[in-house]
Length: 109
Image (cartoon, rainbow, N blue to C red; front, side):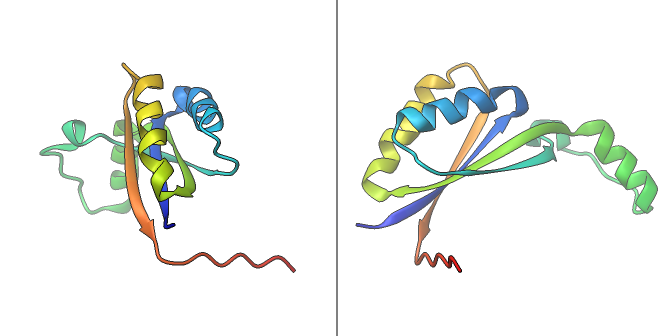
């Protein structure tokens, strides 16, 4: 039985709902990364000047706060988790990436 890594990108306000959906699907562990991102439709045709301060200001002005929720699940459970996210996040903006996991090594001293 293989494993997959699910990267679930959601708006900041949708984090609680996302974690609850994962928990209901039997996910027992995950980690989150907070980031500032911009959707492709908002970025299309946008060019940043290569001066550092101007680039940082432009990025701050055009990005939105978001969360990436990451979890590893059995490959045969991934479709059910993704369907549950689709149902539970209906009407909300989100992205799911599904990547195969070649190996997992956990070190606990």
